[in-house]
Length: 527
Ligand SMILES: Cc1cc2nc3c(=O)[nH]c(=O)nc-3n(C[C@H](O)[C@H](O)[C@H](O)COP(=O)(O)O)c2cc1C
Image 1 (cartoon, rainbow, N blue to C red):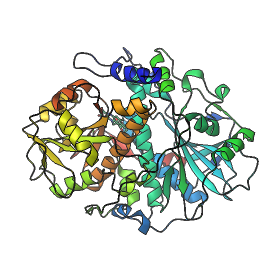
Image 2: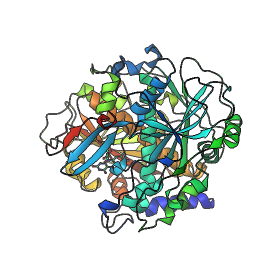
Image 3: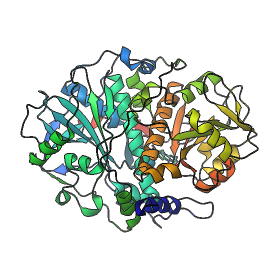
Image 4: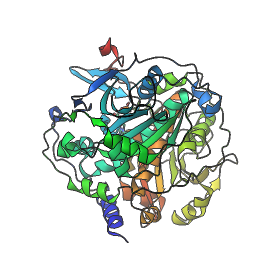
């Protein structure tokens, strides 16, 4: 085992929540001291994006077949819409004097460690260069101006994480949540692009250093040390006009010879606690330049969604449920089946995910029409079924429930209490229609290359984003659950050792609104 693999495995084990001890985090939190959720760079030119909030025609159900959506022209209006639908504000919430923003992409603790950048080359509506998106203002800060505006047209989106923003509240476990959030942001970008008739190409070969160099994240003088940004993902956005492949070295050269502007403002939080293990695991799990496969599952038609809302409406209404109606009627089986089928690698969403599935779902079904309460499994690849069967409790019967997709019954019995206990005693895991754990093919994946630790969480976040939107489309609501007792989950399912590990939980049900909270429009403050 390499040293980096050891560091990653050790980090994972050390940041497990256990029934008798949570992973190491701050002993106290001063809410007045919360890091600023909106990064700004002082000293940059600002490009104000056209007014947010535009509606587009495609229905959410049209996204099952994105090829039928007429591509929108590449313009500043539509680039603004792409950024808004992926990472922009969706509403403000107010309770007494407290006011906080929600965004189209969710985030653990609403801390939003993910930052988004736009790179544009050879487009006439914006100067070629690197721009940082400020979701609060719906504007771009020009971080770098490329010298040559005449290169081939290209549009890229880069994602990075400010680990400190998350660690401020969650301590050592925060690195995991940052990776989940990156996966959610990637999913949010996919849906935003598909709504515009555009597509996302994950530039999976790039190393972290490549991404950092292009986005300017390695310009250490521009960032306060503990508030630096770590590179995560870079994607090309395909609109109707572009086609030539992106030349990594050409872009790196453009960034190196470009003129850089601005310094990141301090996030204004006092760094009372330090979590050096996060920098250690981040380094050990950094991605080298690689040649990645372009793996794709054969596409299968999805059970049609009954949702008649537009894609823009569903994207903007997405929220996390804080509470569910524990007395709800069971949800229709057809809606349940649609939500599950939507996370399989055979759907349009996963066409941009370059790798074979490594994440499989184990569900605690509480209230689904025609299904006995109990534990079920949705292996996301046929190849994994035998290994999962062999690794889980021998009592599980692994009876196939549906011929249409790989859904198996394991055990019948009320499991609300156990689901709640496993998810850090949170009632959202038991008052829902169903909750689930996302189980990764873990040790073999990490041993192949430690950076894949991050990719496993990204895959979980991507699945979570699909579930969030599918839940809204079914008239329900979802919530991501990062707080769960890792090894207790493994024990209940029968997993021993680290061949399989649960990396994320999720729950879907009928939400109860908190009437004490006022909801305000996303961008009224810009008018
Ligand atoms: C990775 C991740 C983990 C989360 N974990 C929990 C959790 O354990 N409990 C919970 O109530 N909400 C959890 N949430 C929901 C967030 O609190 C929510 O996304 C955030 O407050 C923003 O609200 P919104 O999703 O309505 O935009 C999680 C969300 C994400 C993305």
